[in-house]
Length: 488
Image (cartoon, rainbow, N blue to C red):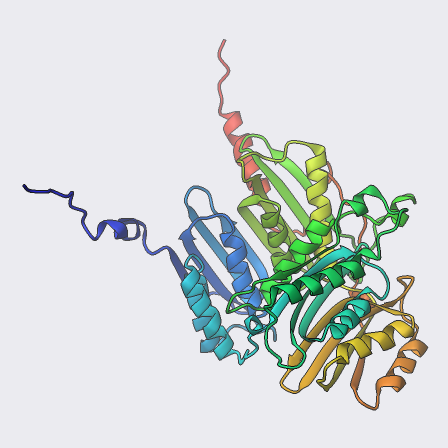
């Protein structure tokens, strides 16, 4: 008896690549532009690929000056004009190799991990956060909460290796990497992890009071352990902070602000006092919603906005990004993952508020304290206790361990949310100066606090050199409509 099996040509699996080219192609051009490097990406399209590419560029602190994105049908085409963190073209061959490898493998998980390992080797990033236990926290913020979290972890015999916390609109999100105090190894005992989660949840829930609004109570205080795989980096943590803040509802105004009339929009920190404007209008002919953003330009801005739209389950089909005179102009053509444009004013209003929150939450007003000291168990708890006892509240924290040194950066306000008095800072400095290297920076001019947005009737006023995909699309539709001949 003969058994026949169908024949499959082994080259069949490679047929799409042979027809359309490899899944992702990357070009890095240092010749076309005088002042920046041009990065071009052609790839098979998938949901979230734009964020992955932007995240690769953000990982190495590249500033995106201009970008054009098109991803209709099954193909993704993108152009980025970038500079490095020193404002120069990308000349370092190690950096170029990393970009080619990381973007060229964004569709392949295994190769992406290898690319991140390559990045750690090239950029001397020896910190392996995956060797420690990650704890995520979100909830309603209050003065001194970050200090209480630090003290609670110290009481639980946990060493804080690294921690990052954002506070915005009375919400707090924090990602901390901890190890066992005595062995400096990951904590993997389920019972101990449950104890840590329970203790920290109690600390967060102490914020909830009977007078809080329904929206605040609907945002649960949550603590959980998180698994970060090998190759975890700072941008992964920042995306997680965005997700935690979004789920905590930081796009809602706090109750005490909601009870007062909305103030007039405030300056977003540029010299001319110009304001952030976010607008949304629908292009009914093409079934797109057009999101337009104008605000003060800053590093990582595109990452923050693309991250928020992606996490809200919107697909970006086309986009145009540019900057001029310190202002950023962004335009996104989006649909929901179900294929529909934004259909209601309430949905538009929520997207506007979430984008405003994403732009605001990273940038902090107030005094920035940079502290470094010999690392020891309980150091962070002691530092934040001194800050709390002097009436200072941490609104953002970046805590790292570099070898035997602990390097901490805090943005501070007083307990009422006002600017910090210099006398208080000097008092804190004297109290800790004998054991800690202390540097104070006033970042008050970097405010990004704005109130309110606008709907489709008032899109941002764009600079003369801004290229708008929306204007081109509308002109084409109008031109086509003029060619129609009415029939009787």
